Image 1 (cartoon, rainbow, N blue to C red):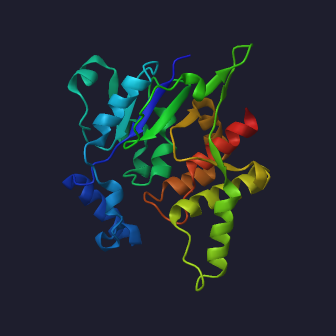
Image 2: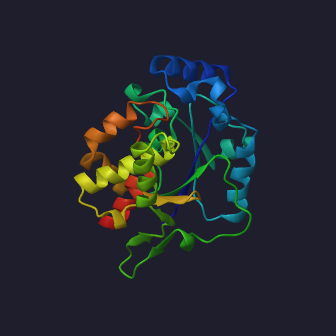
Length: 258
């Protein structure tokens, strides 16, 4: 019952990455791709992935393989970890079809992580700047029932809170600032789950901004049930107000199905 860890990584100063991001921004006209917006800080890299990986090895020695998902880049991790296979680099091309690349939105990239070859059925996910500072046991993320089946321990927040913020900002744009794409993504996913899957709003949840837990079989089922909607969301390439929060879809349906 090994669990693997997945990190997503980007070095925003890489000239090739900057060129691809600028090209997508020029086509879409999306404000978040403008250098003047200051949002480029989301793509900054100060080498934190090195210490993020080391923290997992130190405080979570029970983790199987550590996968780092990136777009034609080489993260600055310890060479011996790569040579031994303890850490594996997964390029976007290995898991994301060409029609959805390049992908600059975490909601899109996260929706493909379960396609990593050799990934454990239940896996953990971290941003590249998440670090662990003390020992943590696998039971914090999943527990095993007497029949051998596994249930996930999910740290959540109610999805309806973000939906209300989005609704109010759309209803009164002059009085309130527009909800950001993160909030819009949760609202969009919640509305989709409510309409298509019949989930009541009080059962729609989003993951807290901590290490997240996912199940491959749940992700594959989501791709089948919500194929059309995911197709449209994945084609957007960048953060925007029409995106779907993958975490909201996966966490809500994990609770509903399992």
